[in-house]
Length: 199
Ligand SMILES: [Mn+2]
Image: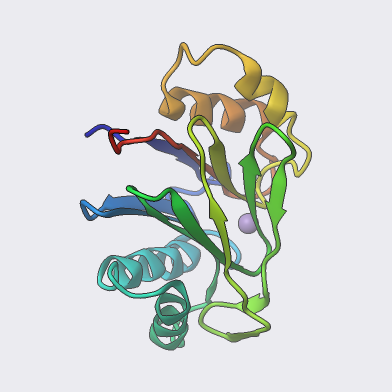
């Protein structure tokens, strides 16, 4: 089955590597999608962000809280990251979303947009009051994860009200091109929920 998910990342001008990193996995039963923003920029930031994604990839079957605590332990010798993680069960549409640090996660739904709050702290440096949220996705709803390298007030509803003629990857790239700040790494990940179960 095809999953509608994609991302775009670009480093701060003058840097070869991005301190923002995205990845997603399909285990067959669920999707795990992550966006990690390593503190600062350059190689040390990229190292921390990649370490977070590696740790997530090794723990795809674990609950959200466990993944965050494992990443926090594994990233102690790095600068640490702000991290957003979504775990989506494909048959039920149940999504668990966890976030720590200055990072953005939004769900565009018909009735209202949901903006998920991140816990205070840094993955790799400790965090508190971490409470993942669970929502039931319905068909066509769009989840966006993005870093603070993008303008916080992107007109996302306008962007996604257009007919989906372009791939989500192209859409992510266009959002970066239009809304990335000049002074930071930037990244955006887009997931559109489809219903796979036959009714
Ligand atoms: Mn940043």
